[in-house]
Length: 343
Ligand SMILES: [Zn+2]
Image (tube, rainbow, N blue to C red):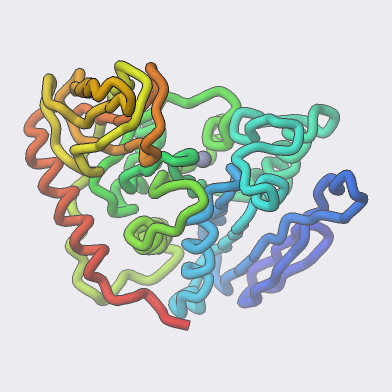
């Protein structure tokens, strides 16, 4: 028989689920704070996967993705262990903020230490209590405030296992991003734990397409890891496209942004992506694409300052229209999907 899973002084027997509290530094009001962690310990051996959200406290799509994943009935047949953390940065969640109370970014504070800043301690707690116990990971994010991201996976795609799981996730665009210092993904990678980062939608908003694609993506990765039995449904998972370079097109002027291109659109160098209007002089300045590619991120707020990043363009080798076509199919598929589960 499989051994019990041990975490925070608790023993979780094979075939059992538990909600475990990890103690975090208190609020200044002396209010105790904990990080609730769902543990589902399968009857049979297999990988240990962590799925976490709200490392940036205002990024909420992942919280809902985890809620839906945990309700999936096929988890009864789980091999291995699933550790799901809906809210890593509770401080940020309370304040609807990306950051921690010490104004640090948790995702720049890994691996952290138990003697460092608040951010360093929280990073250390998560790394030691969660990540170290796992063989694989998925970190769920959204765009920053007022920015939307096309559902995309970022990972170290030069690592074969990360690439395999990134393909399995089932979104059309994969971004090979070099490991950023201080991120959870980088710290996990250094421990030899392949970790994918899912980016979709916008901070402080639920986006249904992003949530559906993310829920499906987590389950797809679990199937690819043999943690779940293969689906009986016919899947039309597109072969994803890998971008190795992306860039931001910035506002040439300060003013009011009028946007022309939608998320997922194919654009060519020199094409007008939007306008910046000056409400006083009536002057209008075009925002012109500096590259061919696909729009994978976009500013949603009309107020811009000169130099603000407005459109995130991913570049691809080969035929970009093929990528854009796949993205369109993907968006339509997830929009028309039946609601995953009503409750
Ligand atoms: Zn984030």
